[in-house]
Each structure stands twice: as C-alpha cells, then as structure tokens.
Length: 123
Image (cartoon, rainbow, N blue to C red; front, side):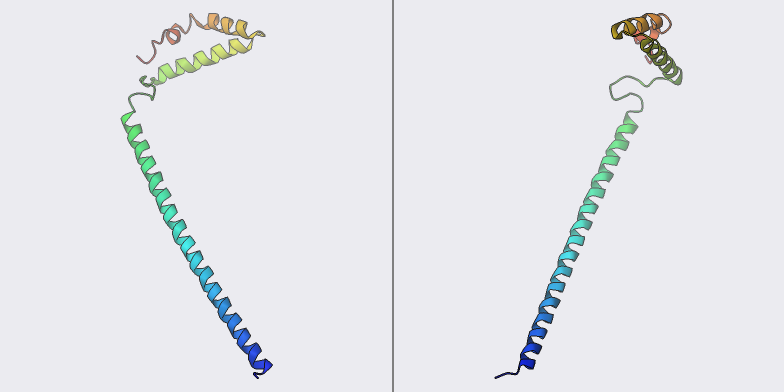
C-alpha cells in the first residue's frame, strides 16, 4: 500500500502539470486573439486607406463642380448668398405668424437679392 505522502505528492504534481497545461493553452488562445486582432486592424487600416484614396480622387475630380452639379460660387457670390440668408432670416423671425414671416422676408429681399431668386449666381 502506497504511503499517503507519496500519493499527495503525485496528486500535487498532476495538479501542477494540469495547471501548466491550462496556462499554456490560455497563452496560446491569447496569442491567437492578438494575431486575429492584428489582422483585423490591418484590414480596417487597408479599408480606411482605400476609402481615403477614393475621397481624394473624388475631391480632385470635383473641384470644378459641387456634388449636385452646380459650379462653385466665387467668394463674391458666396458673400451675396450669406448676406441674403442673414437678411431673409432676420426678417423671417421678426414676424409672429409663420406664413406671414415667410411672405414678409420674401418681399423684403426680392428686389435687393434678385440674382439669388433667379439663380443667376455661379453661372
């Protein structure tokens, strides 16, 4: 009959080996996760670079026109549009009734900003 001391020693040794195997397995799984994350990150970076490249190409080819097909406004035309928006909005919010505010704003800006209403800007 084996002694208790020897039996306990064998049990401790087996537990230690099992623990070492489990730690090695966890380390391998962690390493696998890091590799997968790295691959995913490389793929995301590649995708982002491709998107940026498409954006650069689109921007470079569309400098002469906006996305909706209209030519870009000159700085002077841009200023006229901003002044029109400010004047229209100021008149619009000065009225209590919504429909009346729109009509009053239109009447106040139609003569001074006729180019905006006729779409003569940027052409």
